[in-house]
Image (cartoon, rainbow over all chains, first blue to last red; front, side, top):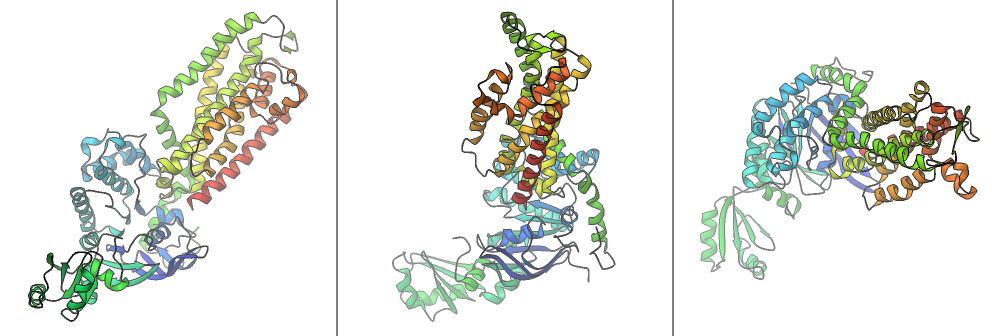
Length: 308
Length: 283
């Protein structure tokens, strides 16, 4: 088996008394698309910064491309492409220039940077924006440019921190498509997200993180199979009636969750359950049957919703 | 470097070790390249202030103030010298220093906070201390340009005694710029927010130093209780060295080596502290 590109054992990060990452273990083999799913403040970004060799671990062992970030920071960073949560493009420079100056940081000759910049602008669907000012780009275009910039050194691992936060649905889909293509080419992707649909779309395997710890690990489908039912029925009775309705619903489903705005019933056959609800004399104002998602996994594991 | 890589290095380790060789050596220069390219976006301002400012001062003082002054303000080994000779080295030094009030303030806040470009650099193989050094190198090059343009105009206006030794005003101007600028860089890098501190530096540090550093008249003219401003001012130390180089002025009571030593110490201390702050913030 090929050596993992990232391996963490007991990886820990503390800031004073606060433990941001509490001794987590994971490995990422080459070519895998690996996700860290969890709410804000779960320790995802801190973990990413340690992998990115820009933040020292407090304890544990970490190897990235076979090297220790404490001693080989520049070597590790030479093999990474990093897409941060907040865009940090240089607005004083034009779009194409942003790629070229960034390529230079890796010691890549100027002529090679120029060729790659043109290829990446095409990949990011920004060819006609090459000479545009960064501030004139839309949010989605800026993200694609940031991804293009992260690819200028042909990285072994592309790290994306909340890649589509703040983008409209269409821009998200364009971005996912680009990331899919990278995945097909064999680039290892490591991404954090608090969007379950994003994790389902992009990740081969993921860890669910909460309060600096790993709650579960597996492929999106396996996690859903293990921690949830096939389908979920969402019922809304009005915010003041959800709790009392839930008492009457108890026993109808394998599991039940009461959220402030709705009641979730976990079952393998949603339509049948809906009929039984009607037979029981309950009449929700709205009802919806859907497939289980990672959101349900997270709810089951932590008792909280991902997006709060 | 690869001492703790124990296994029979797989290809990815070898690739990483090879890819980081150039950035480890030249990372600071890549940052300087970036900063210089950035300056091109306001290149017109750089050129206009670099040439326009000295031109205005030379004309204003050379044709106006100097013609009006009848009492000699300074003298060299051969007796009294033109007022323009006295004032020009100080103006050159001030021009170099004023570059840093721009480049080591707003540019630094922009890099850490507004545009967050330093964080982008930080994710590459370049190290935080190289980011700091690269920024200094780029600003130094801008100061070389400004000082050279100033010196060329000084020569054109006959504002230099000895054109050959006077040419050393360019490095002296840059050194004075760094002596003021690097402590300022350290201060700017330590700020997490701009709540008007840079405007305060401009008004309450740079302007008083410019006015009370023996720029337009000898420092000894000032009452004793104001002269200390000159003693701590890179503009005064740089101007005194510059005057000695231009027309052989007897450097008040300080030997030229002492002036240079003050400038070097200020620059060195500023550099060490700025580097530390960059590393502390980015790691």
